[in-house]
Image 1 (cartoon, rainbow, N blue to C red):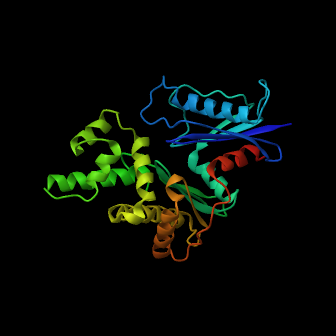
Image 2 (cartoon, helix red, strand yellow):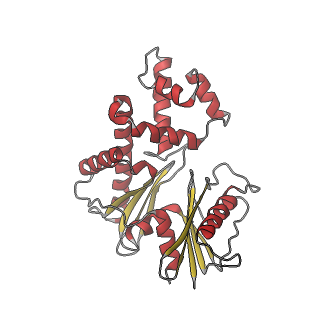
Image 3 (cartoon, helix red, strand yellow):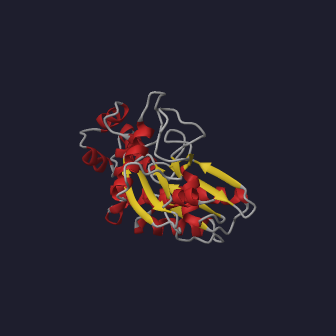
Length: 296
C-alpha cells in the first residue's frame, strides 16, 4: 500500500493527515504552531511541529514503525522557498514545502481556477486562473499586514482602546480586553505582549472569542465588519491581478468559520465584488496538501 501525507503548518496549529493511494484518509494528527517568524537558525519550531503532527497521524493510522510515505507536502505559513531553522525530517521518500496559500487553494478548488482567501492568525490571498497564472496578495506578516486576520482584529481593538485612553475617552471595549487577558490596565496589557507573556496566538484566540459573542456586543460587531471588509478587499485585489472578476471565490481559515463571519464576509463581497461567485471550498488546507502529494 502506497502512503501519502499532507500537512497544514500554521501560526496557531499544525495538522497532518496520512492517506493511501486512493485518497482514503487513514489518520490525522495535530501539533502546535510551525511558522518561523522571529526564529533563528537553531530553531526547531517547524521541525518539531511537523514531526509531532505527522507522528500522531501515523499513530492514528496504526502504521508500522518502518512505514514511509511516497510523498509528503507541507504548506507552511509564510514560506518563501527556504527553511530558516533546523530542517524537518519525516519518513517519506519525498518531502515538499510550499506556501500555505498553495495548499489552501488546492483544497478549495482541487486544481481548478479560483481565488482563495485564508484568514487565521494571519491572512493571505492566492489566485490561479485558467492559463495557469498565479498571484499571492497579502501575507506580509503581523507587523506590516495580515489585514482581516485574528491578530489584526485584536490589534485594532487594542489600538482603539489606547487611542481613546490617551484622549481621555471611555472605550467600550477596553474592559473586555482587560478581563480576557487578566490585566489591570492597558499599559500592563501592552507590556505583557512586548515581554512575550501574551503571544500572537493568544491575541488570535481573543479575536475568536469576541466573534462568538459579537451578536450581543455592538463593539465587537464593529471589528467583525472591519475584518470582513478587509478580507473582501484582499479578494478583490487578487481577482483583479489575474482577471478572475467573477471568481470562483472561497474563504478558508479559523476566522471564516463562524456563522457571524460567514454572513459578514458574504455581505462585504456582495458590496465590493457583486459579480464574484462565492462558493464553499471543496476541502480544507490539509486536504489540499494531500491532493498535491497524490498528484502525479
